[in-house]
Amino acid sequence: IARVHYDPAKGGAPEESYMPQSDEVEWDVPLTEEVVERWARRQKTWDDLGTRGQTEIEATLLFDTNIVRGASLMVRAFLTRPRVVSEPSLGFELTQVGTSVARALRIHNPSDAPLAVQLVFPLCEGGEGGGNASCD
Image (cartoon, rainbow, N blue to C red; front, side):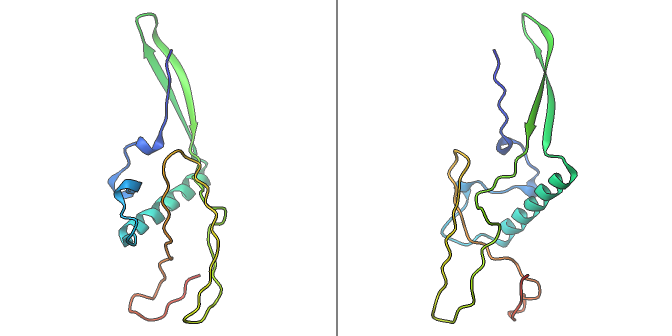
């Protein structure tokens, strides 16, 4: 009897797309720009895989035992993009200085691993010099 277990989080990822694990992030400080850029690249990779229809992994496992040699087993796994929020973006109404606007954000953790969440504002083009910039 054999048990095949696939965990994509355990796979060796290239250093460029490495994302820190939950216990490696200081959750009381903002994420670094490098981590946000890596996250954006990873999201683009997910989009590209879905567009090309490459969300399925197939492999053939070969078993050599004292009873049988060369027994093969076809294994198939699907890459499912994790979703923890029901809406991809959260909009806030215009407000005046000194007041605030609140929005509820429902989060669903489909895994058995702890989940930490941070609010990350989009990087806007043209705002590097301290001037006003607009984001779409």
